[in-house]
Length: 93
Image (cartoon, rainbow, N blue to C red; front, side):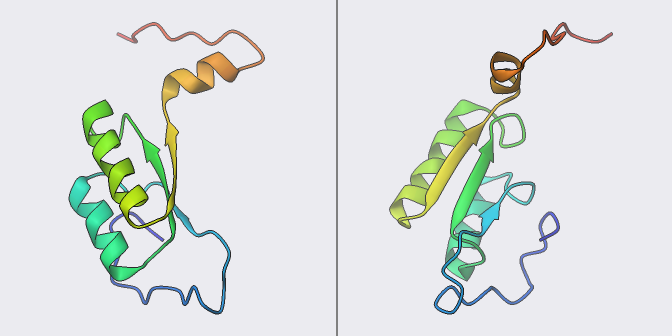
């Protein structure tokens, strides 16, 4: 689903029990609430940098938990820690 394209018909999870995870479309608490209301997915990949920081990401995670959905937390630092080779994380000027 394209970012903020929530108007498409939501998938029927009864016929397709697979995990449908939203990534780029999820940026705000309102996005999370709307996705749950529309049943447009059943899991969130919460990107801390795109969701406005840790506090908002935590609130979005709670919305997923309240809906009995899966949520994963993604942050740029995790890529650095999990990387096989050194990654330059210095600010770019």
